[in-house]
Image (tube, rainbow, N blue to C red; front, side, top):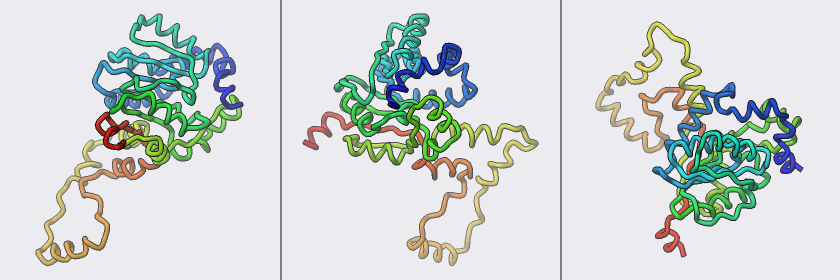
Length: 284
């Protein structure tokens, strides 16, 4: 039932709301955060022109950005209504390197075709996210990468998610990096990197420090001040006990940055790489 509700989503939204959705990112109240997130994804994609598969693309605004950046892009979404809007916008923009298909990302048939697969706020709508990640793995060329930018732990309990489930009947799940990496290992991805979620970077680094102050370096300089050099005896004692206690955080790290790094298991952007041809041969 939830999957059918995803298909019918544009009808449930209504024409006026659908027009607002199709104006993403600029019509969205969180435009700045969306652009930060998309810019992060663009910086992690393979060198252009790469062949990109954008899964759960909705009205295709992310696909358009990838295409404008010089990539060959295929956008896929389960909803024909969303793809109709995506095709109209693609044609209006004159993007010949962008194709859209109506497809359930849990039932894809692509094999070894793409340099990168992107889940941008879409994997958390999956009924079976392991199957979706397995299909992404199959669609990638050896050595290709899968990028996920998804809401993390606690999302399904958020006011926004509960409202979407109640009003539209769609699936809303927590999709923390720890879970995504675990599923990625199960389906065959060989190596991983998790980054602080761009939305959290925006909040911690920009939103929380947006108000001008008299001294713009007051909250950074003390963290970089070198501590006084301890005596020889104290250094010897520290070396002895450092083998028994976990290392402390370096003195130059900022508190808000530490928060981002220490919570990436719960909320972060995931990059997973498919083994290349030589690795696949060695594994066989």
